[in-house]
Image 1: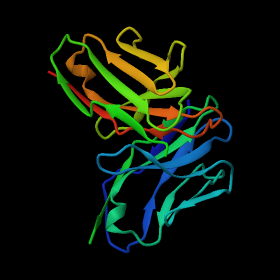
Image 2 (image 1 turned 30 degrees about the vertical axis):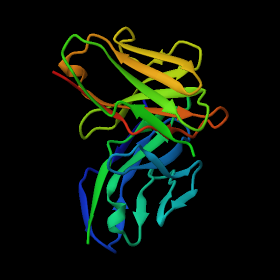
Image 3 (image 1 turned 30 degrees about the horizontal axis):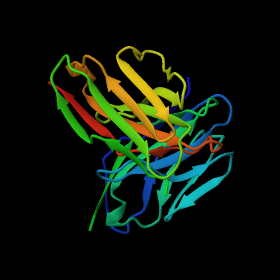
Length: 111
Length: 116
C-alpha cells in the first residue's frame, strides 16, 4: 500500500541555519503531497502542498518540490527561526482522498 | 476561519469504562470528518471516516464496536471508546473536510486518553 517515510528527529539547529527534512513516498499513481506542521498544544496545520510532478509548494519561507523521479518531497527553509520549532509531518493523499502520514520530525531551533 | 475543536483535551479513565470525545467544526460545515490515532513518536493512523447522517467507514483492523463514531450534524462528530483498556491509551485526533474541497482537511488539537 501507499506509504510515507520521513527522517527521524529530533533535528536541532541554531537560528538562521538551513533546514532540510527528507520525505520519500511509495504510491500508485501520482498522489498530492503535503507538509503539515504541529505547534505545541495545537492541531496540525497545512504548511504547503503540491499536486503534480515538479510543482513547488511554498509558505512562510518553507519550500518543497514534488520529485516524481526520486519519489521525494523534501522540506527546506533557508533560515530557520526559534518560532519554527514544531513537529513536521509529510503526507500523501491516496486515490480515496485519505491522508497517509509519515512519522513526523521534531524540529528544535535554538537561539 | 476553519477551526476545529476537540473536547476534552485530556481524559483519564478506569479500565472498563467508556469515554466520549467530541470534535466540532466551529465556523464551517463539515460534511466529512476523520478520526486518527497517534502513538508516541509514530504517525497518525486513520481509524475511520464519517459522513454526516450516515454510518462511519472503518479502516481495516479497527474494531467498530469498540470505537463508536457518530456524525449527527454538520458540525459535530463523536468518538466513543467503549469498555476502554490500557492498550486504548493514545492520542486521538479528528479532522474535518468541507464539501467540495477533497484535498483539504482541518485538524483538531487532539485528545490524550489514558486508561488506568
